[in-house]
Image 1 (tube, helix red, strand yellow):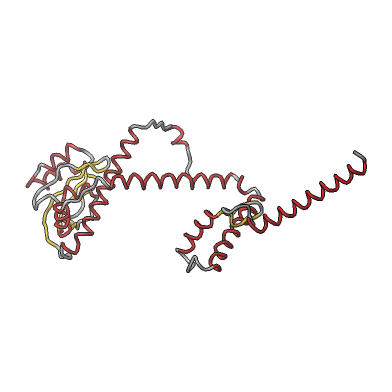
Image 2 (cartoon, helix red, strand yellow):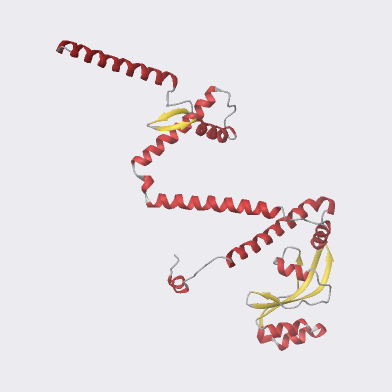
Length: 284
């Protein structure tokens, strides 16, 4: 092959490559714009996919946009996405995504998202196990109508609390006997349903006038409650209050089941605590 023919073939090959490149670019620009049928836009090499757009559209339409069929609406949604991409790129250019504080924030968000998911799943699971009976709602309603006049004494000695609990008509004399063991001696007071911690309320509101509770664990101390009087309050009818009462009972039962589950989870887990490090750690 002559030198002339080689040169001619080389020119033809080069021309062909240029033409193919131009045609490819034209086809790419006209038919795919950002890369493929699943890509709506390309921002500095970062793709905005159809799925990205749909997700943003669902969020936007529920807030401020009127209709997804409107082309202007679509451009508004896309403009928001492009703005976000540009801001992310700017942050990455400044290496903000490698900053320790940012990474800690991401970890915190990740942990919270996981906790939220497992809580939602567990609470949904527990909800299926709960049944609120009519008798429970009626009992709750009766308690809501009650007003209890009670005398409350808190002692640090259980034996003294037991003797006070069994004192009956000698309540005041027994209380005077153990005055040095008394942590708190509250004046007689009227209590409505909801005024006391739940576990105390369940005991006290089952007592009749003149009855005294058994010693109730109260932190590291012991509480003794004596009911002095009882009245019926005026509230809305059971028919009107029933749904709210059932919902309150349902929530309470679910919380109790969740606490039991958490207790089991803790007991079945390996947990080591350094009291030494806990004590010397300063909290500011």
